[in-house]
Length: 421
Ligand code: AMP
Image (cartoon, rainbow, N blue to C red):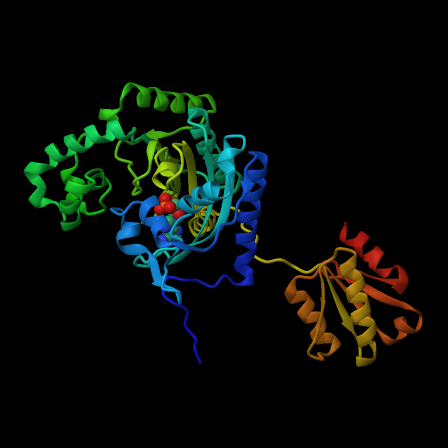
C-alpha cells in the first residue's frame, strides 16, 4: 500500500478546506469589486516560457523547477509562478489587441523544488492578479491597496508593507556597475552563489539570505540611489497614491525580489508572526516581461499571495477561520421500514437548498441522533412509526431539544423556514 505523499505537499481535508474556501471566496469577491476577470492557464507550460519570463539567473529557474520531458520529447515545466503564463495567454489570445488595460486574476497550485519547512512547500497555492497595458502609477497603487484591503478583510493585522523602486533597465545598468565596484574588494568573502551573481546579476546579492552577504552589503548602494528622473517621479506618484489612501508602508531599497523582469515598483508584505517564511505576498511592475516573451513593449504590474501562509497568519492571529461546514438537517429513520421515506425527504430538503444527510450504515435511532449531534446538524427529522402512520414526522431542534410534529407534504418547506432561509 502506498501511504505517503511526496515531500513538500499537503492534503487539505474537509475541516481545513472550509478555511481555504473562505479565503478563496473572499479573494474572488474582492477581484469582482476591483473589476478583475478570472483567467485559468494550464498547470504546465513549455520550459522556455519560464526560462525567458522568470529569468535564468533566478533561484526558481536555476534550481527549483519541476521540469521533465513528455512522451513527445518536449521539455515541460510545472508552473512555478503565475505571471509568465498569464502574459503568454494575454499574447496568445490577442487580449493585447482589445481595450487596455486588461485586469486579470488567477488562483491555483504552483510548484517549486525547494527545501520544505514551515510555510514552504513544493506544491503551494497562490492568489494573483495582473494588470497589463498601463504604466500609470495609480495602477501600482491599486494593486498594493487591493492586497492590503484583502488581508484586512480576512482579519489579518500587524502586517509590514515594504515597497521599493528597482527602476528601469537604465537605472539598473548604473546600479550594476556601482554594486560591482562596491563588492569587488570583498568578493572573496561573499558566499559561492553571490560570487557568481556579482558578474551576472549583482542586484541579487542584495537579497541573499546568507548572513555574511547580508553583513557585507550593509552600506551597499541601493536601487534608490540610481533612479533616473522618470523612475523617481513614478515612485513618488505611487507613494503619493498610497499616502492618499492612508496605507502605511516602509521604503526598503534592498527589496529587489528574485525575478529579472521587474521594473519600477516592487513590494512585499511581511507577517511577523508566521515564522521564518514571513512573506505572505508580494509583487511589482514588470514592464520588460511582455517584450521578453516576444510581444510588443507593454507595461504590466501584479502580485501573488500564498494561500498557505495567509491561513497560517489568520490562525496565529486568531482571525475567524471557518473550521467545518455543518449540514442543516439530518434525517433519521426509527426503523428500517422508514428508510425509503427518509431518502425521499432527504432529496426534497436538498431541493429546498438545505444541506441534508442521513445514516447509511443501518444505525439504531440513538446512534443516528448521536451522529447528527456530532456532525453539528441544527435539526433532525425523525421518522417514527406512529408519526408516519399519521402522515407526519417529528422535527427536533438539536440545540434547544424542543420538538414539533409536521405533516410530510409541508415538511421540506417548513424545515427551510425553521432554519431561517
Ligand atoms: P513569489 O512568487 O516568490 O513572489 O511568492 C509570492 C508568495 O507566494 C509569497 O509571498 C508566499 O506567500 C508564497 N510562496 C512562495 N513560495 C512558496 C512556497 N514554496 N511555499 C509556500 N508559499 C510560497
